[in-house]
Length: 202
Image 1: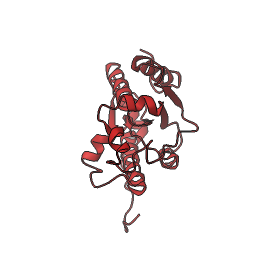
Image 2 (image 1 turned 90 degrees about the vertical axis):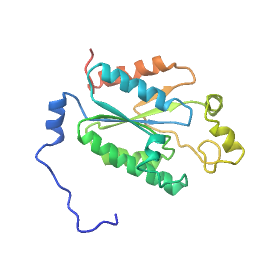
Image 3 (image 1 turned 30 degrees about the vertical axis):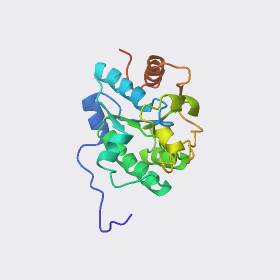
């Protein structure tokens, strides 16, 4: 924290009032997994399903965030940590606004994801969704040819090749896209949200 002489401003409207107005619970659905595992595809499918049910949600995608907010960051361990820290803070603001926030980031380091969980506080505001997929399958799905470039050493610090991915140890939801289709993955996530009273069955 480099800023000084600052005070957090609390408004007249808190998260409970916003949730009452929106008739939904503000939560962060944090999708994590290797590049090509299906994070963005599934997150967008969940967003579409939520929209069709009348819920307010928004997908924060890793590539999109790096176009603007995090455009000054590279892919070193330090920059990756800062990338996740920033999006965690943005996600917290979205959640405080009562929005169902879906994030689709590789977020390879367990400690960084745990820090976001802590940032969100108690009350089941953070739901970690591990999109599990073998490296072999991810490489076969690699339409951007990122893995090809990484194996040619054209991309440094690439997760799964030259940089590690630390799988979640206690994710609320595990989606194995080696076997599950996008439709089946969507159903499993929506069922979890209904069962845990994040959304209502409609």
